Length: 254
Ligand code: F6R
Image 1 (cartoon, protein in one colour):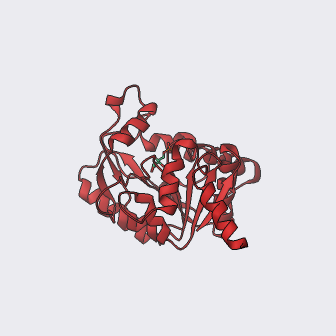
Image 2: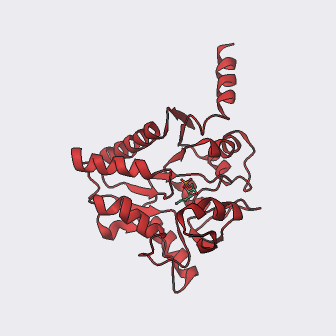
């Protein structure tokens, strides 16, 4: 696990975009696992800039998003479909047929979950998975639980997640209570994981993820078992682990 500490959100975003761009230069037909939320927003803006100004090419790439709210249509301004098209897909040359986001209004949710996992598997698996992290350490919408969910599944969102995401909606009552999310097996099978966290309110989740026990109650802690994870933090999100990193360096020197 590599832990990189950026100066601030802008620095984090441009470093994340460079990692994604590097992946595409090395493997133009990469399978990209993508996240929504506030954290990757500026990374997407930077990738759009690289596409427009230096020709970063997505024409051979494929994408799979982590999750979607259940009940929201793709054209709902709060859906993750809408977010991805507004902030990213409509500005780059990733072919529409290669874009995958779980359906928020599936006719048959079990079939939707199975089909989504099958598509990921048929694509050869995810080359690089971008993750944000919830204040409760969720990744995707894998909420703290007594067990890890392996495959794509329906989730009942935590109160903490509903409160955190209410900022995007007119009222907290409008936040969907359920979502569909990639499971931990798919995330853990990604060849590389890029975990992003920005802001003081993520400092505890990051500390528990990296230095606590591996438990479904801290979903992101499972990443301790992944062989290729880059944890890219801004200084505020890293504030609680700084002491551990300093202690480690001290031990290495002595
Ligand atoms: C979004 C997702 C979530 C977010 C997390 C952090 O697709 O899977 O796990 O990454 O809730 O959200 P922000 O970045 O808004 O703090």
